[in-house]
Length: 240
Image (cartoon, rainbow, N blue to C red; front, side):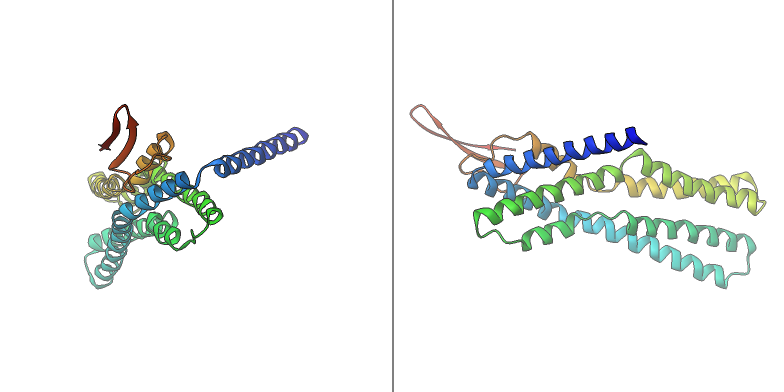
């Protein structure tokens, strides 16, 4: 226990030092660079807001409607196998709807939240940048988790449980259980692989770029205009 306490103390000290260094680095940025970084992150969220909201609300509504529909069929059916299929299916889609609520994509909310923050002074812009970077990292973490092996494993576990319930609990042919598992897994994989990943890509580019202090830098992270001094004049270019 004593070693764990010492390790926790060391970790807390390192975390505090890292936080202070990050704050110091942010305070050393010029106001133009802060403004360009803010523009990049806001543009990233604005561009990803519609796809993220469409994916999240679409699957939430789809799963919810499927749950209600299967419960309705279950309640009105006299076919025992159909009732079993509908009950198990409703439980599976209810898990899917619950997963959307527990693990949301917040890129759309971050776009609105970030835009509402004040940026009328250099100090306010630095504070806003710190929040913006935190939002971008959180959005990227949410997207990464949504495509991770853990998400695939959770989906497979739910669908496997549904298939086993049809096969073993209701004493039906193994083929019926396999079909139940396969249908559920196909839907789950479609949900996982249709999830947007823009925040992950934009965070990677944001951390790799070094031209945020350049004059005339574009606001769109996907198309970067730049201006630089060259012998005999200026060079204007566009990076796609």
